[in-house]
Length: 553
Image 1 (cartoon, rainbow, N blue to C red):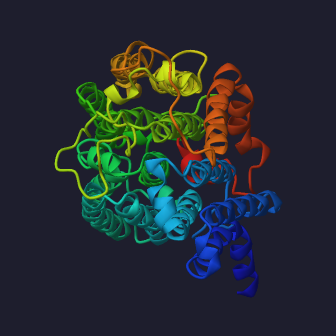
Image 2: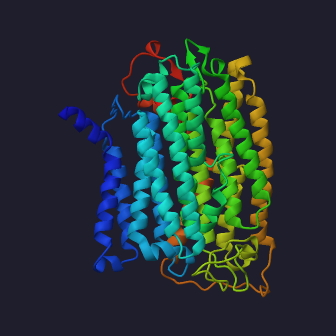
Image 3: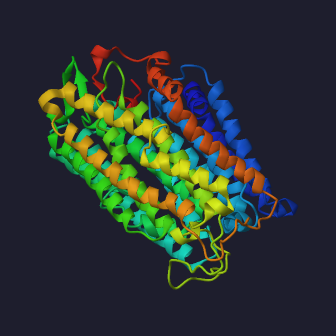
């Protein structure tokens, strides 16, 4: 027993470091002289994440726990991706110039904010290694609950409190649906272990179908998939801009990883046993459910984004569209030994980096003094004299004249989000869509619908280019009143350089992995073969198509 506990502690050491660091951070910075430091909590959170990364790097290879926690190569990749994005999120929220309205939360509640961010990252990492329904549910709630509080505290405005309230109550509803679905799944299988469910004949069980229907509904909220996306625009608009970058990546990644695990557990997306495709052929209702969810999510997200006047609301609906593209990745069949997780993780990273970069640029721009807020009935602390973040396309007008570096960075992020060649976003879309086409060819008749889904995705990507180009055009072609000559916004020197450095790093990553994506792709694809943990032989259990999401094989 002591040996098992020691192995489990070692396996979860990075997550333990994050949670302990979150608690210590609040104890140190919540009172006394340390509480007067605005940058202290951010630096402490950075050190905590670096320590977690060091612990993850120092873990023996392979470390394998065949129980409620299952460590696999793909889980390792997901944990590294979580820590990388966590570093960027902490830098984005902790290094904002003090003159920027986006610093509201960091100024007023920095210890609490960074504590919640560390706890949410720990929840995402536990989701990646969870092999039990109970652990999976707890990990998802650990990921989500801190975001509800952070949204409500993010700005001293009534709409932030309103957004936090909406997010909390809808989040509670989604948790109830997910819990009910997992309970039904336990009733259908008699076990809470995901790896044991794979080998059970539950695919045709009506109880399993009901369970998956409830679970998919609960997880669709986490990833803002249609029709559970209605809250997302209000939440993004009510949040400080850098916080919206957190909401766009961490809960979405956790929800997609959890959905992939459950799909594999009940026989999908595809099970390849003895070289013969199964899964979708024995459970077509699940296939077409995911197909319809992906198509509807990307279509509705892009259609709603086209009509928005608020940039935050536009980016919110664009995140809905990207959830649809990510759902396509859950349907990929492994070709030449490859699985779905490399494409899924690459796209998640591409989206997370570009989206966070766009929100950081918005947090660096003041609205013009004559520009009213796009929302009516503004709450306390909200004004129209340049003391708020850029929220409308008019706020971006003339940015190329006033802040050309920010305009170039925003263009890079917009091009990546729309999928323009030579950016990381283009490689991510190409990776997912080409793998989906190969999956349809591999499955033959059982792969019907794959080509049509990719066509729908391509049309939606073209539609999405419209509103991203509109955002970029506002920076370069629009003009503010009084912008006859180039001007420079007045900013506080303190924090401006570090904030710009973070934006520069995000833009460099977007271009670097767009021009040379192969090292990252190769690492993601070869991880299962290079670091495969000891398992039973392939003949003893089926190898799932999205197994990289569930067990890394």
